[in-house]
Image (cartoon, rainbow, N blue to C red; front, side, top):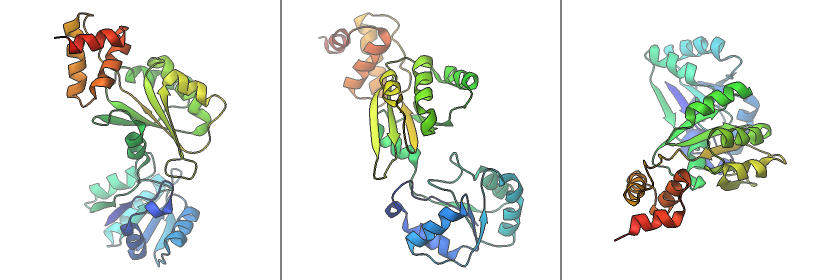
Length: 273
């Protein structure tokens, strides 16, 4: 059996009880960083007789067939990455795909996830969202990706390195609109956790001096503009957003933003007799 085991993204106390149980019972532990695994085992007070192997981006392709052989031989393989759920912007996808193809059972120890944690604390709509991982490092590729996402109506979650956060926020503000609501979630669940919310342009200005720590960006989806500025059309546009789970207050704000009409006018269109 292949077990994908989620590890804490910050505080070790967030580790699910099953994580310790699986690490203790494993025949093989495949770890993104074996040094971090040793620290995790010590923090959890777990002693394991498992064979520990490294499994990271650089050796994923070569090590996957070896781990599949172990699985087919009846061994219990536990895969852990540095933080969060394996295979979510971390090593693991290749092994899962190969194990499934080989007919091996794949299960998971659910636990901390930076994607869901950032989404939950962002204050942005959570009923529909998509995870976009890391944006491309090169400017041209990043611009093309963001252009393709400009009309995406779901809330978007991105991972970003601290030294590229400012550039990515600038690119987001340019590709979408400067006033698009967003949140920068930094050092989630850690001692210096910080969540900064606001329009993309303001967040880019905030990040200009530099950002430290692990960063997750949450960006509101595009709002479909009403066909016209007629009160009935404005009210209908608000109703669509409310049906998607947005509060009336936020729906009025977003329709006003995308239509270029004042919030008072949109409010009156919604509440007219």
